[in-house]
Image 1 (tube, one colour):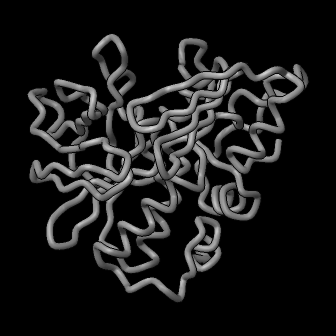
Image 2 (image 1 turned 90 degrees about the vertical axis):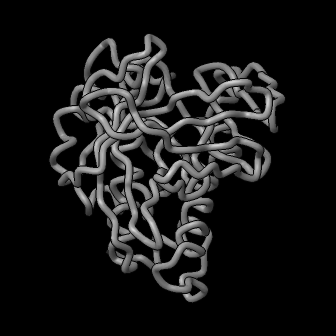
Length: 263
């Protein structure tokens, strides 16, 4: 794992890192979510080229490094958090991959292990996630219930989960929210990378999967986030959201300009 190349990919001079401590972890996470897009183009392919079915998602360390670092692509949770885990380990962090369940609009987390996240042990345990759509988790989040508010006004916490099969739930609240919203359930059990292969295959092939429909591309910004769909670009600044139409002829230019992706 070439950690220097990874750091340069996310805009960090590797010589400025201070070793495996919280300040380093905070820099890496914030830089990642604001430079590497969360996207599913490997699943959908080019939305305007019927001959392009996408290259598919492969949970292989060398492939992920080549895709995300050398080619400058993004990915979804298994790819982004999977590679981030390897980088953190190489940098000396005590980090585990853990399985989580992103909670859908129906209030269920199906299928099991539909999300990969990381738990890092420092002065205490933190969940560290660089592999979700908006709102993105920009800072390491303690498992002790402490609230962390990021630089765009989103507050996060980890709360006990009332499910018998999971231990924690990550929750967030924006400045306009009165109540906390659940993002995903998870437990601390470490998992090998291959544990996620079956769910990864399902999410990139099942017709009912949220990843096999239209393209999803999002990235954190210094003031909020951007999200690109098949024909819309949504900009969120704090609590304010604007949406503009993106014509087919403009789509690839917007993808390159706003997300740094050449497709």
